[in-house]
Length: 423
Image (cartoon, rainbow, N blue to C red; front, side):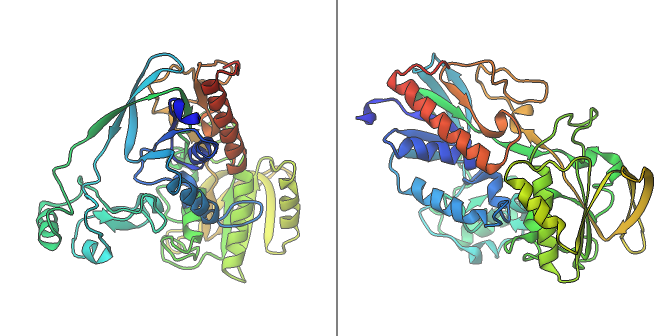
């Protein structure tokens, strides 16, 4: 009977959007899922493990992709953005712009084809630490599992080469943007987050010193399909990092950058410290923190880490990072809070725990939403029929985000069913 209702639109195909789409569809409602990237999964796809269980996120993502692929009630539009929304709740009219893949899908392509061209692009999945060919598969678990062409970097010589390698029906470099319109009854918004630009925190040296990296980069380095095959190596010389510092609140809780706490950074650094110690038996990890914010059940993980001989926590704020130009090692000046002195310590790799910035901070949707000064949606101002979730509202971890997405799916269903939700 649910087929009589108009669809639910889900904007954002990360873990939050996927969860909302699945939950609504599996109880019988039609869903249109829109994602601007060429695949579903969002930032979770770039993670190595979840905390606190240290399990790979690919397991949950694989299950969710299978549930989406097998559910005829879910229509997925990747490489797509919502351009316009008009009409009242229950009768939204949505215009969606779809960018071309330049690959028709009429012929199965593989790496043997991509290897024959020279044009390359930064691999966004590896945060630009590696490159791919201009004809590429985003990653091995990508859904849809389809190649696409980065037309902006493909040279004319390689364009001609592709036409000579594969039938003309397989690749169409003249494809144009397409637009579709859908009528939906409710909208769930899950556009996710991005890491704060560490280069703006100038005294910490990111962008100047190659061995200063960020927490999201460590996730890729630790991953078996990452740029170093799972080994945490220094960018400067490729050596395995043996003495690693994690600098908390890199730009966070700072009125000049992000005044708020992103809640997940402490647990992320604890988790990544374990990556370091597992990667090499003689490696060490040190966290410099203001406050160690691990709450509820996560506090157990923190206390277990304190028992590790090769792990150390120092309560102190890093006020300067300098590089030894000969070795590439990094000298940290730390305002060590407990003894009340300035300490100087040397490390061969430094990881900056940057905060979470909502994508809505600099990319607003055509919806009647109220935002705070940091770009988060103000939850106190309700927009009928529109339900923001996850990091659109505040920084949060995967568990919190998926629970909120399930709740949003229920609210959207109540809207369709005419049950008063107060929103």
